[in-house]
Image (cartoon, rainbow, N blue to C red; front, side, top):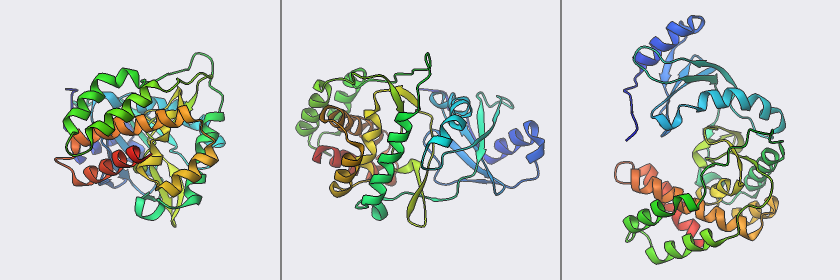
Length: 287
């Protein structure tokens, strides 16, 4: 298991005060719920502090500092504005980040599942992201569906009974058999789900958490169609995105495998995650 250091407000306060004394007087409050990858604290009115919970998230602060300022002017929704990267210290082993605070509420199925406007806005965001040039040598292809085959089949076996095991296996095998992305790599968000979308006044306002940012096959970003949208919203989304059948099928595969992974890891201990991932898996099976 990856190292998981103890993180609390006292540690966050000491890290901020020792490394960024200009912010030492600002109040610090835990953001709840936080993410599965980071403990998040609001620092004053305008900043947020993100401390990785595990070793899989330790490159995010540097990645966001490098790429998000370049991407932001080309995207139709707000994204985080990195301000600083802190260094390991005080027993905390990894780099950590400070960004501008983004106002908004986390997007919900109840508010946006049937919204054609939200579906089109999300498609426009992905199209703009994919259109941004991938500099030579910066490609990060990310994980493939094939690389997840053994773990996904094990996850299907573990979740059989909670969901239709035969249907999950059939979808997974169809997704694996779909033609691969045969074009030049394009940017993908890499963790494009409901929890990483913010709304203001009922409309999408921002996309956050770019730890999975990379370039390659964008099918992984189609997961949003199953975490957020109803069939009506998915139709509007797919039409606006103009996705081919193979990419759409690979996207269903990504929704299935990531949903199963989270369901098996958290459903027994987190009812919120259980509900979200149950919806994601069942919607992916529906298509």
